[in-house]
Length: 385
Ligand code: ACM
Image (cartoon, rainbow, N blue to C red):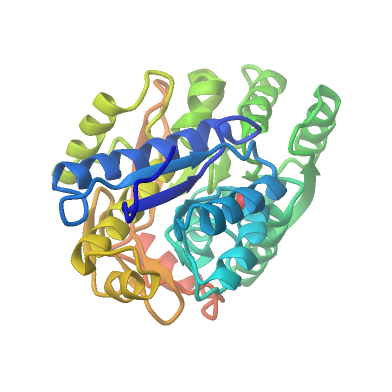
C-alpha cells in the first residue's frame, strides 16, 4: 500500500502463513479492528490511519526484513506484531537502532527490557505464578513439561521449575518437540508423558503442534482418565483446530477469554463477530493486539502525529478500559498491568473461568518475587467447579 505524504500509519507484523498463523491472524484482525474504530473517530486530526501489513510466515529473518522495510523504506516507525519470541528477538535490534516502537501483544518468558518495545502480554508473574499455585492446589505436585523447541518454552520452563520446587512440587519429565512435530515425534512424546504418570502436564507447545499434541493425548488415553494439560498459550484458535473432545478438561491461563461476561468484553466479542472473517477466532492475543493498537492510536490522536518519542510519552499516561479490564503500562519496565484468569475447557469447547486475580497485576518481568504463597492464599477458598 502506498502512503500519501504525512499520512499516519501503523505497521503490522503478524504471520498469515506458517506454524502460528491461526493465532497471529487473530492478532492481526484484533489490531485492524482497533484501527477501524480509531478511524471512525476521525483518525489522527481527520486523517485516516493506514495499516501496513506484511506476512513474515513465522520466519524470524523475514520479521527482521519487514521491520526494516516498514521503518526505513516507508518511514512507518509505530509497529504492532510478533508472536514467537525468536521473532521478537529478531525485530528488537531493528527498532532499537532506528528508534522505532514495537507493541508486542503476546505472552512471553520474561527477563527482557527494551526501551523500544511495549510488552502487552503477560510476563511469568502474571501467568506462570498463579497457574503453578492453582495446579499444585487442585491437581497435585508431580508435573511433566512439554514444549516446542525454542526460547519461549525453554525459558518458561526454567521459571515454572523454580515455582514448582518452591512449593514442594516435582518436575518428573521435560520433553521438547520440533515446531513442526512428525507423528513419530508426537508418539514418542506421548509415550514419555504416559510413563511419567504425573498429576498434570504443563505445555508450552505453540502453533499447529498444539492441536496435534492434545489429539494424540486424547487418542492414547481413550476412555481412561487423562492428566489435564495446562498452558499459557493454548487459545480458542488452537481449540477450534483440535475439537472439543480433545480439549475438554484442559486448563489455560490468560488475561482474557471470549466467555467473560462484562459489558466491555461483550461489546468487543460482538464487534469481532462482525469484523473478523469466519475462519478467524477471537483469542486472548487478539484482545491484546486490539487494546495495544487502540492505546497506540489514542496516543497518536492526543499528540496529533506519529513522532515516536511524543507518542510513547503519551502512552504512559493512558489507562484503558480494555475487554479484560483496566490496563496500563508500567513505565519502569515497559510491561503492562494485566488481569490473570485461569479457565478450564468444557465439553463444548467453552473456557470456564475458575479463578481471576482480584485486580490487574503489576508486571515483574524479572520474577523478583518467586513466591507462590500469596497466590495460594487468594485461591484457598475457591471451589474448582
Ligand atoms: C512466545 O513465543 N512468546 C509465545
